[in-house]
Length: 263
Image (cartoon, rainbow, N blue to C red):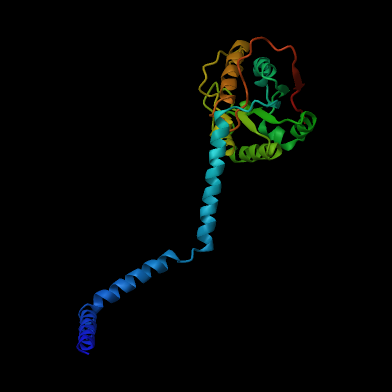
């Protein structure tokens, strides 16, 4: 009987201690409970659809950029049907570029339209005709050598946009004219539309000129073509292709010569 009373007394003392602790430290206990609850709620806080969409978009863009960067490290070695079109500057360039395309398993189809401009290529169906004929997998443009000193740049911008819309999704690069004097802005128009990784800047090249002081000599044009070819196989261009140095002259040329347009 005495043992039972002793047990009851000890139990009462223990309960009393617990109650006393609770009364004295109730604020701290409530704070801890609230803190823990807040942490749990934060962990399970629902995320908005916009947040998830933004993260998914950023992830997809990163993957796209990574893919582009990886592709630039190694030139595309597959066979390319290259359509090379533009003005009279092509006459010297194509003599050397065909050596590169033949040596690397590509086809080069050149269309030289003498005295042509972005206006003519934009407003006629000439480009569409040769695209249907060649079925190109790669396009090289060399144009605007006859527009270095124009002032209607807004209109030229529209012509360049029209040409690019005709090219569509086909990989392409635009070789700038080899300025013999500072231009009035046509190169800025081209860069703005095609981007620096599809624009080969010929303005700073030191090229020997012919009797007209504008067109490079055939020897200089060959050096110009060598520089373009090195760029075409480098990571500096958006769509690098195989362009190893040729060991011999090409035996075949497909060149179409179009006379100046007369209305």
